[in-house]
Amino acid sequence: ALAGLNLTSANSISIGRLLPQIIYYVYTYAVLGRDDIQFIIPSGNFGNLTGGLFARAMGLPFNSFVAATNANDAAVRYLESGFYQPRETIPTLANAMDVGDPSNFVRVLEYFGHDYEAFREVMQAYRVSEAQAVATIKAVQAQHGYLLDPHTAIGWAVGEAGSGKWKVEGEKGTRVLVATAAAVKFAGEIAAASGIAVDDSAEIAKLQSHPQRKTTIANEYAALVDLLLQQ
Image (spheres, rainbow, N blue to C red):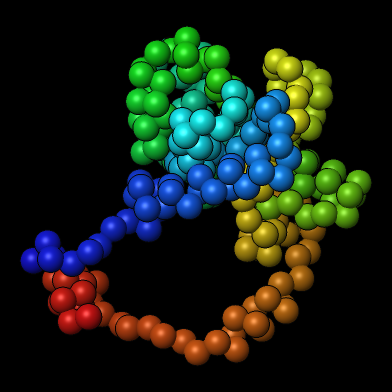
């Protein structure tokens, strides 16, 4: 019934989501103009990282991508074993990265021709515990006066902590952390986990000034189909 409609998923399983993400990497190269960039990317469904690999395939000289993951660590386990082993999603503070079977990881494997050694030449992956992420949020706030969201904190923990198991291997190069979101988006989660209050009143007030557009339908697939066909 919906075959005639141009519908797609809003998440990064859709190629339409990945195409604009390529621009992040093109812009970074245009600004920095360096061939030694190492991207550190908080990774859940691996859409952003896949966009970076697409930019590389288009000719940009990127040879180091680091996937920073939470407990949903498919890339880490692939590097450890050579086998892709999806599993049930584990809920965490960085909930946008809670993907046990990332749809774009198959695209990443296809990019490398399912060649484990080719993958290892370009890719690294590290997992960060929830405790480490919270500690990073606190430390960066104290040292730099900047409040990280939980996802970016995971990338920061991988990229900046320079010793022990958090150390990123290989040549340091020019590290670029791909930040994920504004902390205000996760105000409640940050406050509960770290005790740091996030003043989101101005942002919420700004949103509340916009007109609301919503439609209420029954919790049934048929009702959704009817609504879409009416548009």
